[in-house]
Image (cartoon, rainbow, N blue to C red; front, side, top):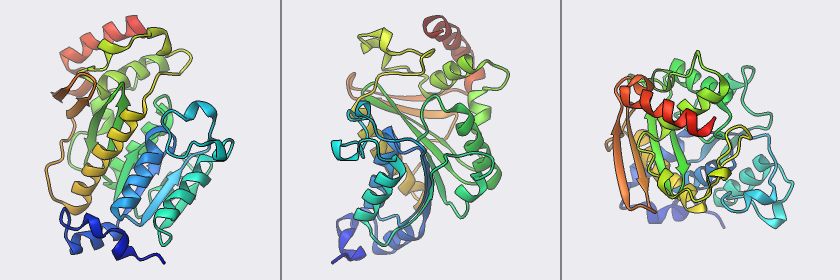
Length: 282
């Protein structure tokens, strides 16, 4: 028999009983349930959050097996949204989960973010139009928004909170071609670029084909880092590193880098990085 208090009892100590009830009442939106999105949903469900808006229009395929929480032989060709909703409800059958199977667009973004206390970005790296839309709406509505990017065997984390630098002010994407925007998004996510030195097959990172390599370790790290910052934001305790500051931990290189890029991608170091990355990737 399911019992909420019993299910989260091992959280107590790191959070109080009162804080756990606060987490239970909060609502989190997650767009994208593939790589990091599925891991975020399950991590936050196990943390005790009981209200979600989730979105995805894709189905599980064999090439998802290396990293995606809902990818199994038994779920092949099933909608990711259905599988991940089912898994989250298997953690907490009392959870309230609103689903958006058509993906995120101008017609449903307001409904997707209705009553939301935090947005956790999990869209595919190449889904820039949807990502720009969600972050823009989060800024307008005063909703904290975080992104934890799985890069190599590590995680790069950025937070865009009300009253601080916005997504667009940091990444500076407008006025560039789609391919150039993707490069700017990459260098903005990862100013330290810790993952580059051990990319052993550069042909696997193909911007024109819109595909890149991934690892399960990076996805799990992202879920832990995003989940921890979600807790801090939702409970209002603990320091959250906000843009233009960022955090990148790489387990392969045993390195932690705290980055600071005043002006975001307009920073001189970022302008140099853009020119170098553009030559390498485009």
